[in-house]
Structure formats: structure tokens, C-alpha cells
Length: 211
Image (tube, rainbow, N blue to C red):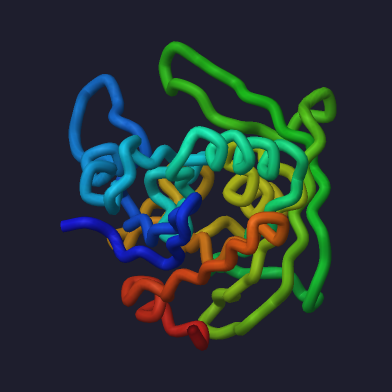
């Protein structure tokens, strides 16, 4: 079963990646987006290739380049911050204000016992996330998150460090049966005319915060 195609032109694809599916095959094997690339070829000589990262636990918009020039153009757009990414998340608790920005530098830390994770560190790389409240209820808040930088696990660490971890986050919060309540809701690349929006998964709707 291949994922839904949210956007397609001669150069770019945007697919709706399910939660729990890694983009690339890991050393232990198992399903990944790479298993679907042949089905997403749509007559092209080359297999499409992911143009950016998306955590395995995160659902939603994943951009792929269908040609070498397209993949190069997408790489430049992401590197230059010319891609507008919008995420939706359900967090425990939440901010008292309606809008704001988190600006906390992040660094990677590793240990033999627990592996690696990202942490807030004054000496780390700058990281900024704009947020807006979309709904509240039952001790939870539905947030729109717009990353202004592209650090690994940025949204997850920023929300947890600010006191409102994303529901179901096994690394920076508390695991839950429904999984991580984080959706790559929309992506826009104006220079390439790309715009796509992913539907809200049923597991997130079931959290009852107005989605």
C-alpha cells in the first residue's frame, strides 16, 4: 500500500507519510518510505528521492524530488529557508498566551546507556519556533508550529523545554498508545509553485481538542 499523493508535478511529489514509518531504511531493516519509491516513480526514469527529513513518528507532508535538477533545487530551498513548513501538535498543558515564539539553542548529546537526544544548550545551534494556539480542552492545547530553523527534533524539544510536551513523545515526554501527536500539516515552496496540505489523522482527532 503506497501513501496518498498530496501534490504532484513533473519535478516534485509531496506524499502523506504515515506515523511510525521511517523515511530511510535503518540498519535493522523494516518498512520505510524507500519501499514505496518504485510505486511513486509515475513513469520517470529515476526513482523519486526525499528532499528533507521527517521523524519516523511524525505523520504528514514529505517532499520528494523526481529528477536530479529538482532534487538540487529542493535542497537549496530547504537550506536557504525558502520552504514554509506548518505543523500541528497536541501538547499537554499549553501556553497561557495565544501566540509566541520559542528561541532556545539546541545541541546533540549522546551516552552509551541511552543513545542520543537533543538538548537545550546555550552553546548549541540557534533554533526558533513560532507557535499559535488553535484550540484548548481537557488539559491539552492544539498548536500550530512554524519552525524558523531546521534543527533535529526541534519542535519536540522546544515544546518539552517550555513545559508543554507533545502528547505521546517517548523521548522528550511520555509515550502513549496513540503515538506522537505531531503532524506535518502543510508545506509551501513558492519558488517552485509547490503547495500541499495533509489531512489530520484519526488518532489525533480522537484527542478531542477541536481538530
